[in-house]
Length: 433
Image (cartoon, rainbow, N blue to C red; front, side, top):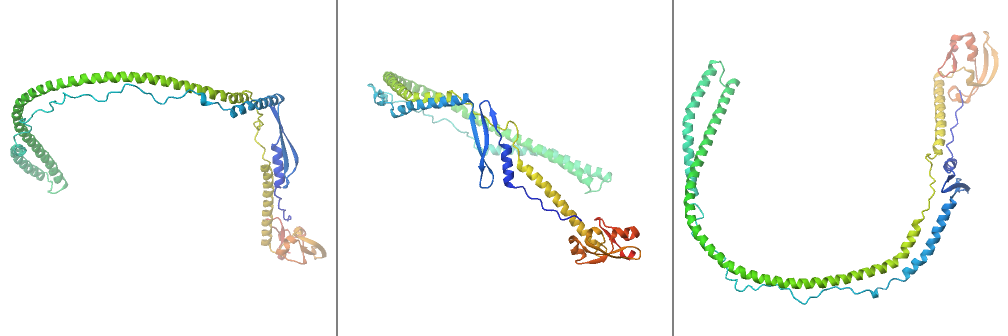
């Protein structure tokens, strides 16, 4: 049996961190500059201290130096512009209002136009029907009942005969009363009867409505004749009123035209003065803009100098390569060692369990024993030995010294007395020797 395996040691975090840093801090050189790394000692936790150095290409460095120099020079001009703001006291004054001499006319003289004809006498015009609604409704009901009665006088005997004929026919065919076939036939005739009676009612309703309309139209024609006479009288009164109002309206329009002419003159005067005020304010705004532009020029010039000459910043990327993860590599190695350790432990556990199943008296494998001393031989030549079990077997086979045979010797004389356990250790059946 093999010895118990040692537990693999976990990766050292400091060693892993240093390996990761060393693998991923490489020197880079580009047309615009370089990036280099070097160590400057160790940190308190044992990890390496790294120093990064970035250098621009001489051409790029010269551009950067020139840009910084120009910025410093122009900064004085900017500072002077900020410390000496423009004087706005000399600006032309703004105009906030426009005055006019003429006053707008807000009212129109309406004297002479107050006697307008505002209404026409319309009394006597018939605005409703003479026949009351209840009389119209009664006429419609009477006509409807008469029409419906005439149609049912024809339908009643017809359906009485049809029902008797249908009952006789079903009886002759052997159809029992209240059977499914009997009820279907009766329901079908009932639906047709309902349909015909509904049609009769609808037709009678139309007849009643026609009678109502006839009486209504007669009453309406009578009212319209009366109203035509009244309308002629109303039209004559309306014509006289229109003539009177037309004269008043003409006088009002003449006065309105004069007021519009006065207001148009005042409006023209106002617009001229407004245009002059706006022109003066535009000159004020332009003068103010010029002063502010003069103050802003040094700042704009400095910004133009700072952005005009572009410095190409070196790009120290990975160059398309993924960073190396050394911690994963260490972890993979450790996982492999740990898996091997677990496998050996499992094998030893299985072997130990098998030996427990053998029993101490049968365990005669030389590999499970130590301190073996020959003390004699049996008549058949088998050696008799004093021995102790190895430490791995003492808890199951026993502590102290024992006397017995060796399985490898027994196997030569009595092969059937030796058995091989699945664990690979041999055992001896003492009863067979």
